[in-house]
Image (cartoon, rainbow, N blue to C red; front, side, top):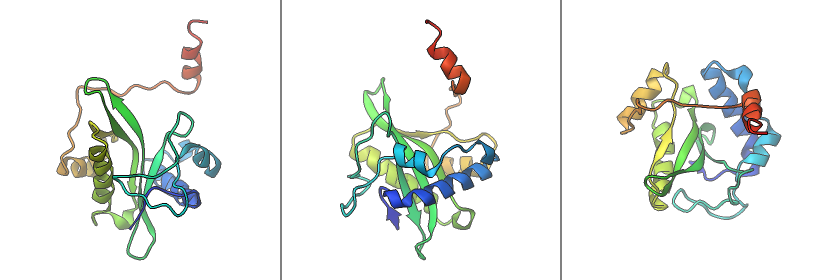
Length: 178
């Protein structure tokens, strides 16, 4: 069962899953997210309005509130996984798409189809909006995830290298021409 898209009362669960993902990736100390920062950066569903992956009904995304999140619950209504994502754009295709920032399924829910279910919902949204692609990154050491992604048709982009500027480097870059 999905919570699509999430509502503000889901934030403690989202933060819990983010922390579990960070622990799995050996980066728990790097988590800076809090309930307050998630509340101010995720686009939430209005109460009592139906929403689906092909017609998500949330507050609008914006530069300060760019993210959306799907939560997945097991048959006992316990949270088992999440997909936190935002919209991106392909200049060559001139089409929007989705960038999956984090996909996480709890250890107890793995190999039960939950990860596939989350990815299928995101793919449905991309297709429904006539988008160009669904993309994400995976750590090189995470072989079980890589094998799973390849099994559903994802392809590694070996020609590309991820780049990032953050913290002091971002401040420095912003002031390079001052």
